Every structure is written in C-alpha cells, then in structure tokens.
Length: 246
Image 1 (cartoon, rainbow, N blue to C red):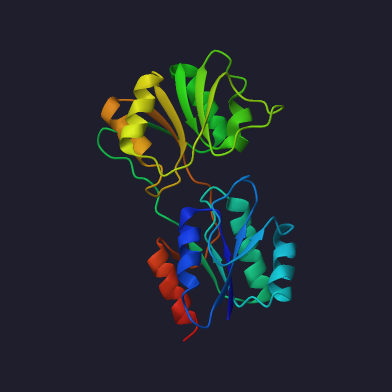
Image 2: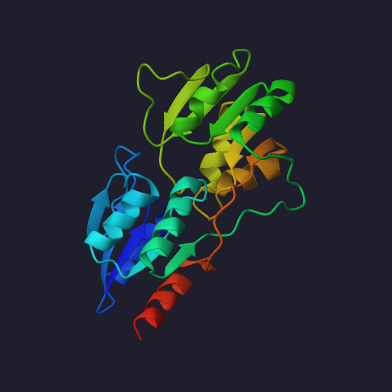
C-alpha cells in the first residue's frame, strides 16, 4: 500500500520516519521546495509542486497512491484544499495532521489578527523594535514600515533583490531554547513579536519569553482548512494509517 505524505513540518518528517518502519507500506514524502535547505525526512522524497488540485490528482493516479496524509504547515492552506479536492476526485482516504494552536494564557499580551496585512497595521500604532518570525516569504509585507526596526528570523536568507523592512536578518532553524529567546528579546531590545500561530513546541519558547518579559505578541490566527478527518499528533496519524491497512 502506498501513502503520500504532504510534508514541510517536523511532524511530517517524524511521521515519515515512523511509517518507514511499518511493513506493507511504502511512503513517499513530498516537500514543496520553498526552503532551500529543507530538513529531509527519511524514505522516498519528492520535492516540488503538483500544479494545483488537478495536478495532484493526476499524481495520485499515476503513482497508484492509496492513502493521503496532509502534514503540511498550518498556514499552507492552499495545498490542504488542493489535497482535499484531489483525494475526493481520486476516491482515496485523506487525513490531516493538524497540531493544536497555541492558546493564550494568563500573562500573555497578544494582539490577535487574521492575516499578515492586519499584523502590519497593528505594528503601526505601538511597536518600535520588532522580532519578526513569520517566514521569509512574508518579509516584503512589512517593508513599508520604515520607522520601525526589525529582527527578521528566517531559515533561508532573502535574495539580494527581495524587498524587506529595515533591520537585521537572522538565519536560524528551530527548535529554539527558552534561554536563546530570552537573550534575543533582551539583546535587541524587542518590544513586539510578530508570530503565526503555528502551534507545536519547536518555536513556542519565544511566546514563553514574551510572557515573562511583558513583550507584546501580534499573533496571526490560522487560515481556514478544508473539512475532513483530523488528528493532532504523529502517534494518532500512525494509528490511523495502521487501521487503514488492516
């Protein structure tokens, strides 16, 4: 039985490694290719887009895929809708591995917004030194905020011709330790963090550090996802998969 895992997250890499040990299953992990040096999961790898829902449906047919697991980033909503449409068209089971959102707790100073445009608007009124942790592809949205200073943490550096806001680019990959995040907030005199509500443990330390130090967090809420069966962790995804082959 062949399973396609749409990846790009640590959960997806962990799932691919687990699935590779299950007899009777051949897993193919697919990465979008947006990160120049991605964390490569074990097993069979495919890198690149499919060409929308129709292209993905063609791939599922051509490769004789029996099961589809969508373990993409919570903010990669378009591929999730494409996956739902393609799985329905081909008639195969689909599962979403969708880790829980971070929940606001006592001491958090969050400004919750629905998209990146709203995040930039929120900064205009109350920030001066911003820790921007929304990914390389979103940097240009903040470039017009010339009066603010940004520490931009990304996995890959922006290209020389990319439009980015004033400040400093920091290339690093999680998971990040709490002490690391505390030092960043102190050393760069950060008064505001901008973060997507990605969930998970790998980047949550910055939220804890902000809570401890009274730093405001502009939190971008997740986009809508297609309906369908979901699990919140790798263990449950493995259990779903094993159940499908019984």
